[in-house]
Length: 170
Image (cartoon, rainbow, N blue to C red; front, side, top):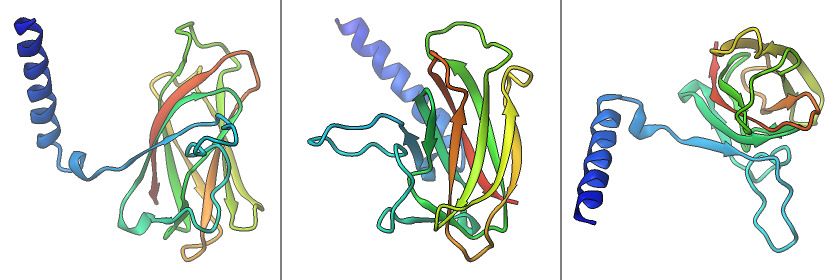
């Protein structure tokens, strides 16, 4: 038991040391997005629906919006309004099937920008099969002072996917 405590303490110390060497690591707020629809008694998970007026705003002019999609089988949204950029870069990293099986030719993500009225502004398809290490897509927004949100859509299959990345001002 003491050995496990020492091992755990060593691992925690190592992670803290690694994170402290990254200047951004301590200030990063990673938004975990989930498409799961809750029951009436549950709290709505981030990303299951587009943001509403009271979801808060992330100012891209002040820094990147980091996200992590743990499991998605259809679509997921940013949990906050985004603003401060007329164009954005969306990185998609670590795209994989949750069940651990190999990626297939049809495994991809469509990234779409919507304005505050839900009107589609721009959309880009990213081929995760051809780019297994990830990549970046560039999209237009409704303008640098307008609020908008992003939707990530995967092809409707029997598979669930996970990925992460960031949204930054170009």
